[in-house]
Image (cartoon, rainbow, N blue to C red):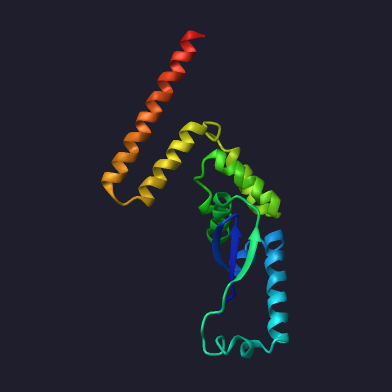
Length: 178
């Protein structure tokens, strides 16, 4: 049974198996932090008599409480970081440039060179400079994947279309008046 880790980013908890946080980027700061906490946890349990100190819960097959680690980071970006740790490059391949830039900063913070290189490559890819189109494309893909109710999709897409129309109209008006 794998030890679970609960990362708390701000007030948002994320739970992952320890290997998920350590295997894809074994030399990263987050991997070292998790490995240190696991070693500390093992020492405490060895010192306390192991499962007997927990009332025998682990010996009976009950799931151990996750080890909690607080990180003072933005939860929305930590979400994508964890997706990359779980799924690899596919998880970040279609992210819009503004999200990739945030993820790049996060990857650098945690010393995840492979993720930083992937984000940099995606940001330099042809078409990456067209942020509006990329953001819209990403949003539409997310809506298709996350929202299964056609009436909700139509409503949200209608609002999006209205917002885009107003933005384009305002942009054209400002351009013509200049």
